[in-house]
Image: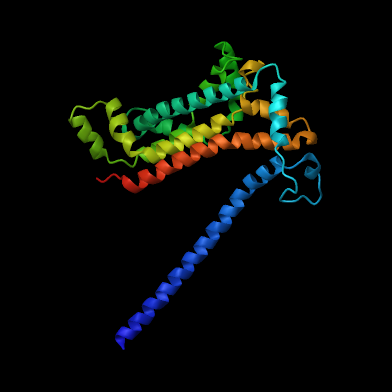
Length: 290
């Protein structure tokens, strides 16, 4: 009788486990559909003809899909004084430069703040935490004054240099590096390794998930960066600025604006997919033990 009772209890527990797993799967599926819905709606709007954009009530599908909006987008940008390839080149240059410089400087700064003891360390950490409360728009005037003194207005450096410092990225990397045991750092120092070698050959290889997360954030923010505040010459403008100019023409270009949004969405999705794969592999196969 005791064996039968144990079997019944285990069957009941297995049923509860399956039920909770199904509810969790259903919740995650609904959450995924809810988060994917804006992307789906953007794509549908980009392939809708102009006459279907003004149908009321609006439909979540298109009756006659067309790629005319994409052709109009390239045609409108081709009519500018600067070729479309120039805008793409500016955006790629800014994005790659900001991403590489952020990963380089933020990784070293986070390592120093997390594992080095020096006067004023706590004060700097508090300043970083407080800076997370402010948006970048607050310091636009100060940035413009500094860049004007350095004669960097109307150049790509006016977009790249202010974006190298990222309080959020520095905070995330510092929190991640703080979890590494101090015994590893002390052992490396005992073997004669310097701080630079410890940072890049010992600490960073064990923090690839945090580094990949920083790459995703840096790429997304720099790819969607508007250059209108510091750049006024057409040849130095980035692609998001030109796309915003096209979409601000009114309802007649609503489909073209959605086509441009789809075009701007593709590179961040590719980078996120590649980085997410490395994050999952690193978290599954690596770890630090004291």
